[in-house]
Amino acid sequence: MRARTAVMLALATLAASPAAFAQRASLADRVAALEARAAADQGATELVNQIGQLRAETQELRGQIEVLQQQLEQAKQAQRTQYLDIDGRLNRVEGATPATPASTMDAPASGAPIASASPAPAPAAVAGKGERGAYDHAFEALKGGDYVESSRRFRDFLAAFPAGQLAPNALYWLGESYYVTQNYALAGEQFQLLMDRYPTHDKAPGALLKLGLAQLGLKQSAQAEATLRQVVKRYPGSDVARTADDRLRAMQLAGAR
Image (cartoon, rainbow, N blue to C red; front, side):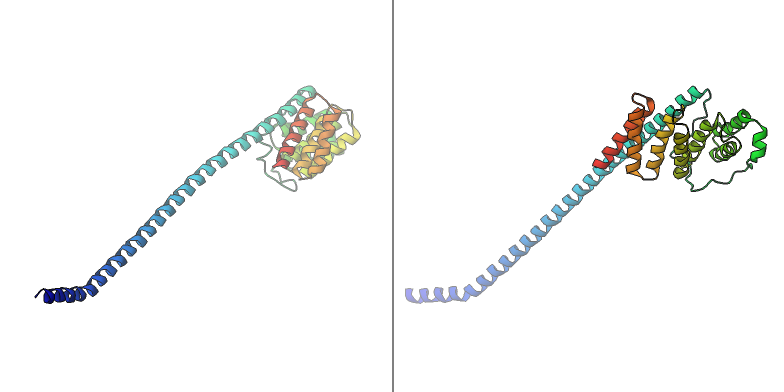
């Protein structure tokens, strides 16, 4: 009897084994699927975290760019102010101060003089005004901010009075009229001409500085650096020398980046 019972139990156990194995295999598959899903969810979470971190870094970089842009604009404004301040001091030495240009950087660029509403007087008419009258007539356009018209009037003045007492001043302001409208090549020609003809004139230091700035405007870095170093060497301790030195330092910093 006992032997029969043992045999029956053994047979029952053998009969149940395939089902148990199948059940265990199914459970293992489910566990593996859950683990795979969990791994995928974890990967997605890490990806989301990385995206969030990248967004934060991008926002931080944008903030830094805005700060740098603001600093650059402040530096440009300081340079404009310093540049115009030197002009004002030179003008006071001359005895007449022209109106401050709105911005030497924001003036419209042009490779040639722009047409003006009022026609320029002929040289004969300019000569009829006399040297001082013709000079003041040109200077009025400069003070009024009409730099194209002032360049025309100063050209006519120089044609009528090429060796006049005010010719150096006219050359300087003709160059300035070109410079403000970003005609750097023409501006440089006038400043160089002034230096060649009147090297000891009161306008010579400013003309040499403006020549260097015009060369910078033309992207002639090597020539500009040489000219600005001449300013520092020829006129040590002067306002033009300090401005030239500041510009040289800015060029060095820009080159080191």
